[in-house]
Structure formats: C-alpha cells, structure tokens
Image (cartoon, rainbow, N blue to C red):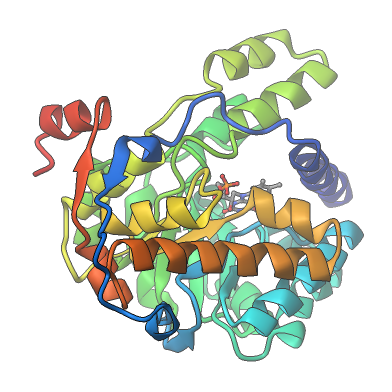
Length: 362
Ligand SMILES: Cc1cc2nc3c(=O)[nH]c(=O)nc-3n(C[C@H](O)[C@H](O)[C@H](O)COP(=O)(O)O)c2cc1C
C-alpha cells in the first residue's frame, strides 16, 4: 500500500516537472503587475554602483531579495535538479525552498534528494516544505523534525493548495481544522513558519486569520504564473477522468492575481509581516513592482526549473540578469536601497485600481 502511494507521488512529481519544462503550466491570465506603473526619476542622484539590494531574511544576509521557490525532491531527477538549484543559490547568495517533503516522511530512503540541498548550500536560508493536508493527518507533530533536520532548514513552509487537491485524482480535501493545526505546528517548531500558496494567491481575510495565529511570513504565490489546475487537468485527461479534466479546465485561472494578493496581504499588517511576492514573477522589473506595492522580497519557481534543466551556468546567468535588471529599475526610480524601493512613487491602473477600491484595501 505504502509502496503504491510512493510510486504514485514520485510519478506525479516527475510529471509536474515534465509539464513545467514543456511550458504547459503557465496561467492564461497575467499576474496584474502590468497595472503597476513606477514613476520614472529623471534625476536619480545616485551612483548605480552604490545600489544595494541585499537584505536580512531568516537570520541570514542575502545578496538580493530573491528565493528559488519550492520545486522538487523525492526522485532521482529531483535530486539532480535540487543540487543545481542549491549550488547556484549558494554561489549567488539567495534563498531556496525545497519541494514537498511528504514523500520522505513516508520513505526515509529518499531523504538524500532533499539533504543534497543543504550539502550544496551550507550558508543560505533554506526552507522546508509540507502540505497542510499532511499536517492535518499527522498524529505526532514531532515527526515534522524529520523533514526540518536533514536540510537544517531556516524556516518551514506549509503549502495551501486547495485548487490542486480538488482536481487531483485522490486529492486530500479534508481541510477542516487547518488553522488550529497551523497554530499547533507553529508552537512545536523552533524555526519560523511560512504559509504559502502555490499559484492561487492569499486574500486579506485569510491573511488576517494567519497573522492572528502568529504567522509572520506569507508567500502569496498568486495567479499569473504556474497553474496547478492546468497540471492536474492534464493529468486527469491522461487517466481518462473526464470530470476532473473539465473542472480543472474551468479553474485554470482561478484565484487572486499576484499584484492584487500582495496588496490584499499588505493591507492586513505593516512591518510585522514579511510578504514574499511570487506567481509569474519573470523579470527584475516584475520584482521591483511587486516590492513597490508591498512585497519584501520575491521568488520564482518555473523559470528557475527551466534554466536549471539547461545546467548550472545557464541558471547562474539568468539569475544574475534578473538582479541587474532589478538594480536598473532601482536606479531609474532613484532608489539606492530596498527600503527606498518599498516606498517608490507609483500608480495603480485598472483593473488593479478597482480591485483596491472595491476591496477597501487602502
Ligand atoms: C514543477 C513544480 C513543482 C512545484 N512543487 C511545489 C511543492 O512541492 N511545494 C510547494 O509549496 N510549491 C510547489 N510549487 C509551486 C511553486 O513553489 C510556486 O509557488 C509557484 O509555481 C508559483 O511560482 P511561478 O509562477 O514562478 O512558477 C511547484 C511549482 C512547479 C512549477
């Protein structure tokens, strides 16, 4: 029974990687960052070389406000990719999350597909990962240390993925008691707990509940990037599940666009809440816009995977180009530091503007 489950999870993980590499998981909707207009500064009055985009994150100083978001682990292919991702994150001194570690709770023999990340990246912030459905099912919450310790994680991310679970054949849809379990696990672990979405965004109502439970970091992963409805709909088609395929197709773009989700969450708490802006972030300009409207830092998943698949040198070059672009936009807005970028002048255009007004976010 356990062996069958393991094989199923491994097949699903590898299939997600394959579909992402084939560029089949991109949402049809944008992340709405095109509705954020940063105001050009013709008189920056700073030297480009003085621009500093380093920041403190999870007790470590990272060189740029960027993480490689949770992607993989649990399979041989995942191990190879994790090593490339981690070595590059270490070289560039940025953060990294591992993919869901549920599989290594069931089968410790795959633990090395995750621990390779800490072995390859001794100095960076590394984030462990598990789904809320697994936390709900855990009878002994101490077992969470079995995923934290092997990677010496600096934080634990708990992913919320109701869209995926509803479409995925045999998805876990028993989510009653989620908030209570989040509070319990937060008390249990000695590292910060991050609550993350996987591509449908977090609303102010949900953010309020989480902040009320003591959560200080949200990874909002909104609509506009990877769509798990697409992933599961394609998989449902493969196995002939017509109903799930159809529901998946209708929910391809379900959720809150990244720009709107950042504003939703920032409306709930000011400095005490760290927001990681994710979901269709594809450039340094996207990063700058996300941070000007409320994100403290940003992350990317799908592009990191695609460049990692082409080798470490390609991934390194891609990330460096993103950081140079971010610094270019900081220059053009006269911001020598991230603190200044967080307060850069901007306007919000339609439909983001209406969203903010209707939702009374300001
Ligand atoms: C192939 C693939 C696998 C993923 N696996 C996980 C996972 O195991 N756990 C998780 O929390 N998020 C997972 N994600 C979601 C990402 O971490 C991220 O939140 C989401 O893809 C949005 O970012 P993007 O638009 O830059 O891809 C995965 C994404 C992709 C593309």
